[in-house]
Image (cartoon, rainbow, N blue to C red; front, side):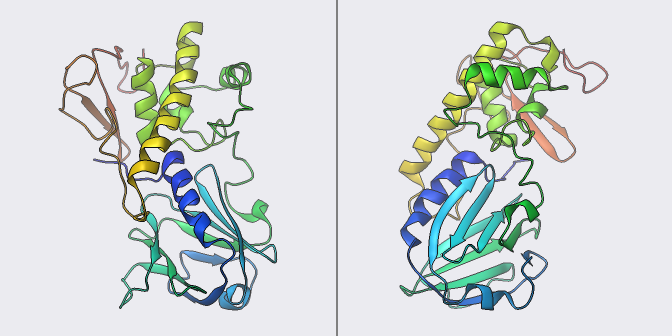
Length: 280
């Protein structure tokens, strides 16, 4: 069971790529799946989009933010299967194309969601977007020093992987990169936060910063214009069940819970599940 949710490194590179459409104008807009595209401004969505110039493309946590010149924002939360495609117009629409924007250079930007789980919010106020106002600091923000991160960590409970993926704690980390961070730090993903040593806390912080930055650099070199294609083959353990651990050669283990798979090395990340899911 793979986890295909776009995470901080994916969305950081996508936002960088989409910087090329900044200053272009939207010449057409078609909402094909209102269930996915939530117009919080009321009326016809196209009237809020057509003729507007794109002022910026940024990322916040696992959201992409397309800001228009009149302070209108398209806040995109891809969730599990949402993908953006930019390029020459397609000859025909796909079944799950939710939003199609025609741009002034003749290209188009499409949001496609095979699961209809992601959302595109049209708003003037990001506080209206579910989950946005409660986002924690960015996991790669230089202002998130080790001391600040350690203090925030002390207020968290439960398994360390669940802590890492809590967007209120730090923004941007999902299932896949949480696996990578735990493996890099040599920490059992089901370990209880309260049982981490000070040395392990420091290793976890350094692993978080290193894994995410390395992921961004690799994706910058490999994604190119294919921003709708997920690149995860370079990850060390996530999605690699049964393959040899890059550190020790032991088979990578997979444990599933609530449709989410966790991948780790039992040799490099020793631990014991107690009562099924209570980590050692």
